[in-house]
Image (tube, rainbow, N blue to C red; front, side, top):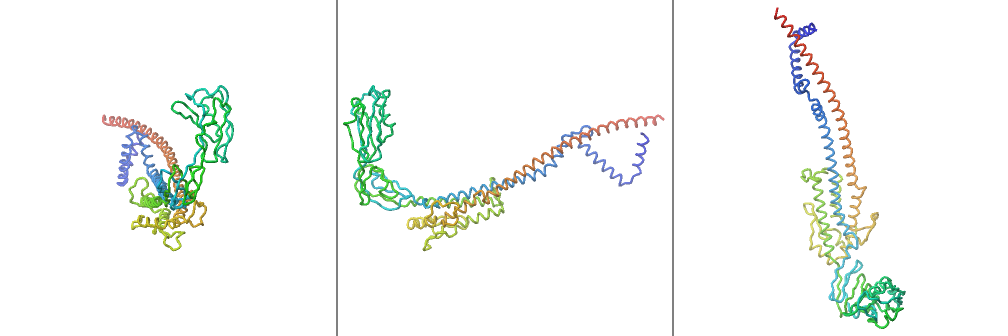
Length: 498
């Protein structure tokens, strides 16, 4: 053993200067490693293994996370664009049907005598109305009075017989049974109302007693008779307070009779609710231009909001955190933006015959130098006041609720735009498909992260095992070194003693 060590020492002395330099470098490197590792058996192998694994994981993990962030940005950007287009579609949807323009404003010179409600079927115009009489229901009062609502009417069951006395359909003949257990004024009222025969009842307090008031439907043909099997305790024969009658009115010189005070067929699309008699009064019906103007203003706002969103998602310098710069260079978004702009400048598929209303420009809607819409309210007001029907045709083609599958019927500016946007926002549209693809890529990259973590876990286990074994070997080497040092010391002592 001693001879072997001596031989090695002689070989080292005879080596070249290059070998000596290399050996010194290796020795220094080894010393650095040893220092880093904690010098022998003091190695923190777990920490060393973890640091090496972290160094290997970082670039791969960062690359994957960058791809995830990029595709999450695409999803956010597409969602923002869909929101923008949905806003514009809603604005066009509110302008695409004929019924969107049929709101009528009502002016009434005798609102205390009648009210008027206009439906979508009403048309603009002025009317003269005179109310001569109101429709009335028959009113019948019980002959008997009671001091309290829970007084006993009869100790036996009572049968009331109802019969229609006119040709109307408001009253249904039949019988009403009042049981002895429920034979009170309140019980009689309850039984009449529960029968649902076209009449109603309530308790009338006169100031000193209660009577039962029975009322039928309005109209001369809705009279009735009500008889009682107990003419002593519950007679109705003699107190008919009011006969039923029809309303009489004159509309635009035409005499009209109505069985109800709700007159629905005197003026097309208008319901008159008669309240009192009146001499000739005027009723004005005009197109609600304010409602249409509000809808067009909403379209301008929706478009400009959409353009602002397009600016943010496509601008590489956007500082908006949520979806800024997420779709820079995206060709689909660029195409949609161009399509949206053309909707505002293209000629209507249903222009007026003389060409006076062919574009949104003719309603005062224009693109400015910044690409945003502006609205000339004076131009729009003039168009709505003077050529309302032309405006409606320009926007709708006079269509109503066209099927989304109908792609051939000319539908005006709003109708055509709604079709295009419906397609763009559909499940088969570009936005949905690209968003779904990005979502799939995110899932794949997250799966890559999971796989990377699995590999790094295995690598950590391998490093930990290897470094632990190395640490053990270093410990053994130290033990050998200590033994050799002792041997050399002994030999030196022997030679010194000589």
